[in-house]
Every structure is written in C-alpha cells, then in structure tokens.
Length: 199
Image 1 (cartoon, rainbow, N blue to C red):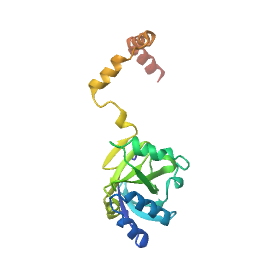
Image 2 (tube, helix red, strand yellow):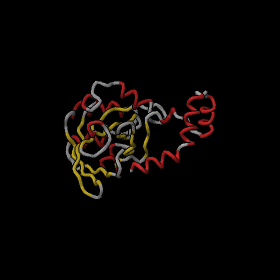
Image 3 (tube, one colour):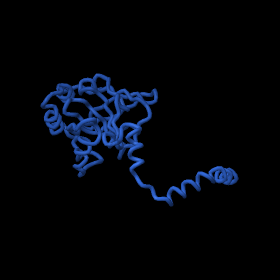
C-alpha cells in the first residue's frame, strides 16, 4: 500500500475535463462513466501531486479494464463489486493513475467510479476511497491512500473476537501439530541462543 498521503490536483482544462466534472452521482453515473471512457479512451489527464513533500507529475490515462494491468480478467469487475465494500456496489473503470510508487501491478492505481458516484483507487487487494465524486477529485480534494480503505474479502472475515474464538474451538487440531508447537515453545530460548551465536 502507498505509504504517504498524496493530494491530487488536476492541471487539465478543456472539453475532456468539462465532461468529466459534469458526471454526477445518480442512477446514470455508471453509464456516463462508460460513455466518457469510450469518448476519451487513451487520453491522458495530467495531475500535480505532492508526494513526500515534493511536487510530482502523474497522469490519469482514461480507459476501461482492457487498458489496465488486469486486461482480459473480467472477473475483477465482480471482485470489486462484491469483495471489498460493505455492500455489493457496481463500479466502472475510469482509467489508471500512472507515476506513483505503489504495490499495484504495473504501478497502476486503477481508478473506479461507483454507482453512487464515489471515486475509488484499487491497489493490490486494497480499494481506497479517494473522493466523494468526480468534482471533488478534480478540485484537489482527492487523496491516496484513501479517506477510507477497504481490504479484499474483509466483509467475509469474522468481526468480533468471540466469533474468532468460536471458530477456533470448532476446529479439531491434529495432536501432532499441537505437540510440535509445544516442543517449539519449550525450546524457544535455546533456539534464540543458537541464533544469537550464529550472528
């Protein structure tokens, strides 16, 4: 995951920018995003960001899933829809943000617009909420890491410690595994001493 907050400030003017900031949340936002991508695919939208207190130029390249590191992997759309956010939410790919160090494949933050207009950036099994809408993104209020971060599969993980304990109690552990663990625990000090001698 990115290690520092990045403020995103657009430097682009013209019809592409005007069309983009007109996209508002509402029932047609996904269709508007799709239409925007079809019209401006391959267009680069320059941004100025502050990264480690230094200005840096980055580019948002407009495109759909096929223009990302996930080309040919249509299941990613379902993954983003069902496995990150608190409830299933349709998302449309807007493009990729290139030029920022990150853990994502090809160093690309995949920029997604949700059915409620919220803008997200996907980075290696993490979905960052970077702006409430397109206008906020281009007014310099977009940030990475996101205002809120959603991890892959988090909605399927137990939420309470008691729930975790119930799950563990329900699992029958193999006695040999327990014996091995007990042996390792009982010899931990000797293992550490041997490691210290090797250093």
